[in-house]
Amino acid sequence: MRSTLHVAPLLLLLAIAGAVAADAPATYGPELEGFDYPRPVERYTFPSQGREVSMALMDVAPERPNGRTVVLLHGKNFCAATWEATIAILSASGYRVIAPDQVGFCKSTKPERYQYTLHQLAANTHALLAARGVKRATIVGHSMGGMLAARYAQMYPDAVDQLVMVSPLGLEDWKAEGVPYATIDQLYQGELRTTAESIRNYQLKYYYNGRWKPEYDRWVAMAAGLYAGSGREVVAWNQASTSDMIFTQPVLYEFGAIRVPTFLFICGLDRTAPGASRASPEVAQRLGNYPELGRRAAAAIPGATLIEFPDLGHSPQVEAPRRFHEALLRALENR
Image (tube, rainbow, N blue to C red):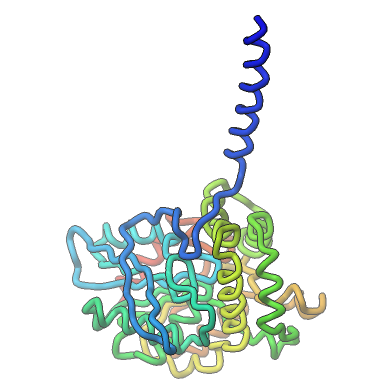
């Protein structure tokens, strides 16, 4: 009887410890070590800005190729893995799919110092595709990736079959609208305070309009695990640097120079506006009016086709994958 009384509290403590461990947020390495991608991850290593860097990528061959390649460019708060469902749909439809992580993000190199520009990331992506033997591709970019896709199309028009921008950032100039500039040091301090809760709250407000689904949790955990892991400081620094890139390099002023078939996917409930939290209430209220911004962008890009989802937020490929992919496949067939 005496030994049983000693064992019972021990078992209780072990059970509590197990429950706490199960509830603890996942932590990942500085290059997202520990988080599994939906397809095998390869690497493209190259010299850039005086150092060797590498980009992680998924290069997925279809069972019945149609001869075309689609490149998927992730957003700032996302990774190539977030395109999981899109990769599956496109591959099943005959497309070769290449989904890279940009330098500074997810499973790719995070330099201690790197001058982030959309031009640099576009050049990196172009070099990666050349190394993979891809001369022309359809470029699909979401959020920050939409900005990058627009820059890529301007820099390499002969290498672009079609341009698809999904909820792209950069459709308005936040500084010109009255958002105060924040230095990279200030942004870095803010990034260090990032948690799973803050990521979730931001996405709930700006991406999903207060409507959360359990399937979104995986992507929150993916991002939060980077901040919670051993690479916390370098992750935060790179995120601050890329926030500065997004804020200071709007792409709307050069939309008239785009000369490739363009599809603009705009969501009516999207209110994403980097820097809105440091703007006055009056300024913040008028930012991120994507229905209006989408119409302006479509009018500015020669021959652009505007595709609207009035009831969706910033991430249609996550929020309503079936509808998004049906629209995407129709666009890809419309050459």
